[in-house]
Length: 336
Image (cartoon, rainbow, N blue to C red; front, side, top):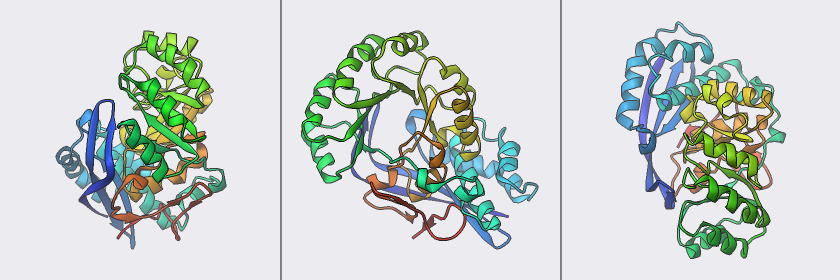
């Protein structure tokens, strides 16, 4: 088994702004595993909010190299468990490795990943398309540029309700709201009443991740379902989110890959919570991996590659009508 990786700068079509950061370029690390005549790709982006850089992801992968190349593992779950101490502080790097392992392994099995998992690609929910924080005029222009049935609207400004009111004048599409921890409990409860009238489906992470008392109040009194994101990062967070949120958004890069992501989804379902998998503006490598497990989900946010001005990979193709997977086994994305 041979481990290698490449760094790519992903240029965005538009400046992407959320409550705590803006960016025009997204750095990403793409991992490749080669062995037994097969190869697999995985990906993880950098993220300053979580302290994840190309340098510390690369350092973790180098520390794991002897383990990865020792061939003491045969299935992705084994590699994940064997490497969990190395990647304890860097789940982003573990995600890239885990996705590559799943791609390699399912290619070796001669099956697409969704086939190996016994999932039906016809049951994939439609992804939302994300509109980052901007002037109202530019947010409207972004919606007109990409006419989509579901928009995720990033908020966290002094004028959040006014923004949603104005956007609603220009489309009948479903809205999902993501405040990225920017509101207080009082704001979230008060806003929820009008947002419900404006055709909003749910609110994602309205409060800071540690504001548990606030979330109890929001959960009780909100007119809209609430979804955890920053409050649900790793497997142990799922149970903590029960009775505080109606749903969880699993980010594979934050969780450490498909292996723990599948466990989080199953646990949330067992607790009666709805599930979503979200993206971090990955290329088609990471987005295609998400698409393979999307049949498990109630909602999905896999528009990352659609936000790029240039994609270094090709993979799943997404339209409002259907999701088209690459030909052949594995996850199937490839660099161009």
